[in-house]
Length: 102
Image 1 (spheres, rainbow, N blue to C red):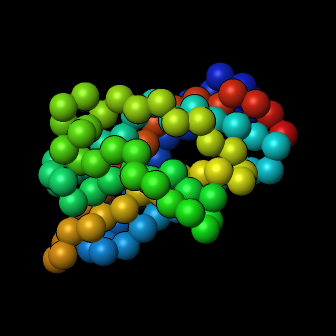
Image 2 (cartoon, rainbow, N blue to C red; image 1 turned 30 degrees about the vertical axis):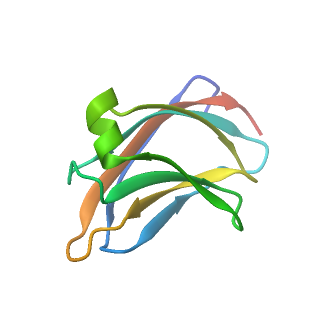
């Protein structure tokens, strides 16, 4: 994958689960969008270093902004998609582009 190429994925995340999205060593990405099929406050995109985690946006935020975010990630600081819903798995997605090669 070259700089400028799109990075996109959709995961079916189980209820109460988190899907970590890590970047290869030496690469950097900019994540520009986040989407959830639930369209509610139970899903979120989180920024993490594997020890500390912080909330970036939730499903209700993605409705209000059209899913727009700007999150720079690398191998040491990556992101996760969280489905905090109690009973159902939901598709969660992200999109962005690669800014640095390995």
